[in-house]
Image (cartoon, rainbow, N blue to C red; front, side, top):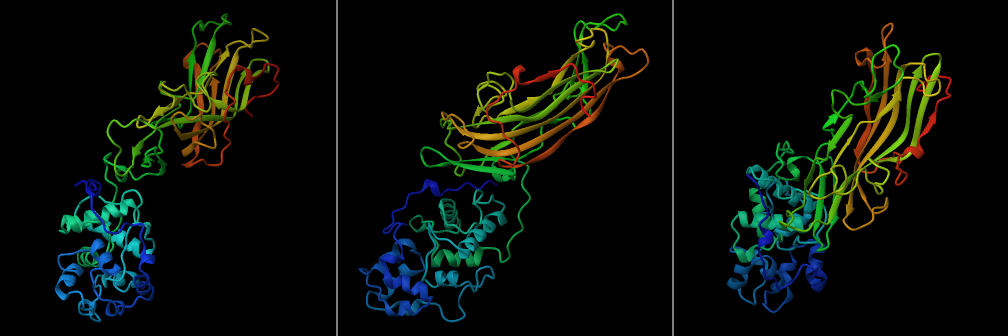
Length: 472
């Protein structure tokens, strides 16, 4: 069963707001500090006193302080309604905690802005209460972090409604009556973390491996969660040889090109469609104008593409420290132009990256014009980042958020086999080597990031006079 917070659909009138603290009521704050129930024995319940207003506004109940006020009148102290020794909290999760015991004893409230271990126990208890019933965790974003924020306030209100509080009593504040219900209805033992459900319903259904929360213009938040870091397509083996047009397998033929690439079986070398889920709580409004874009950055640490020809002739193409992009005109830092399939996308549309590093070599050495190619090699290191940028901002390394990163190493070779083999005969080529994911993880990582130095012909270094094997 899905658990959706209902607190945000309610409005409650409060005599005192969350920003008003016990500092406004020094005797109340002192009693909490001293953790003494004697406080109630020294103050009367005159309806004009601050303590009477404070209690009635934040924790009215069908069986609690409000009834005591009406029953015992203005001139009787509260001692008759305080619990006796040994009648405190019974649930082992809460029993003995000084702050929770003080809350149960009408001496302390937990509300927006409260922090500490006692808050974490309340959060954990409410989470287990709902999950034990088969509903979703009402604290999917921050969990039991010990901070009483908006998510916790909504979860407390949901709990109050679920256990039967009247509308006027539902305020998202933990006082005596809410603490009493927690003590009686929360499972005595903490439940193990449930196995994430195989569903795309919400953030918790995918168990995020990387998560970033951004603040929107209206002060709400959007939380981006990456739920899987395995590429949709990733070739872990050898590459592929493709004979180009005009390449004819005849001993006399010295024209044509052969393509060597790191993909296999017609598939790209790698492809990733970002498995992004929206962890925002509450969910974003329908048809809301997108405020964020997500996209991929890909850079090249180093690359050597080489070919060996007859008579100890070699060709070498090298490149390093460059931003990879589909064309030299793609603006930094993206892999493709915005609006294209592989460019940045307005969230919640998710970005895709797809690449197959490859090189074309002449079947005859470009200088001699007669020596046939015998082998080729590809060695390269690529880095990839998934980033978040505010729409309208010019992205810079200092103002984007790095959600996840990957590093890919290519070490592949191609050999022409058999006596009298001709390079235009595709079946006579043998591919060896592998491609590996050498690093991946949340955030920026430590790899070299080249923001704006796009790969283009001007960046490549071609050497046709090399006298040794290029990839060794």
